[in-house]
Every structure is written in structure tokens, then in C-alpha cells.
Length: 76
Image (tube, rainbow, N blue to C red; front, side, top):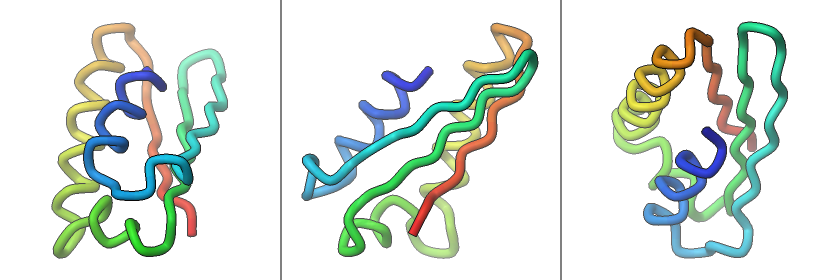
């Protein structure tokens, strides 16, 4: 899961070295905290949050295959 999200995020940002993804996993829930450079935050979130929503949708469909719930948080 983390690797797939990392691939998506790395293709969106300019400062690839400042991307970090922290993963916390419970029994049924996976929480992924995404941190990017401040200049790239707008690209990751998109206009009115459309890119962020699309990323969450793709990741939720992948998590559903494993019968898990996924939460993606974009950190400042």
C-alpha cells in the first residue's frame, strides 16, 4: 500500500527528496501520513481537493481488496 501511494505522490511533486510517508497499521485500519514540501502541497491536494480525493479513492479500492480501511492524511 505504502509503495503504491509513494509512486503516485512522487509522480506529482517536484521535490521528490522531501516526500515522506509514515504508515500506522491496526487490525482493520491502515493510516498513511503524507508529508511533502510546502511548494508541492498544492499539487498533491489539487483544486478544491480533487487530486487528494482521487488519491483516496484509488487507495480505498486497493484496501477494500484486503478487507481493510485506509485513512490518508496530508500533513503540513
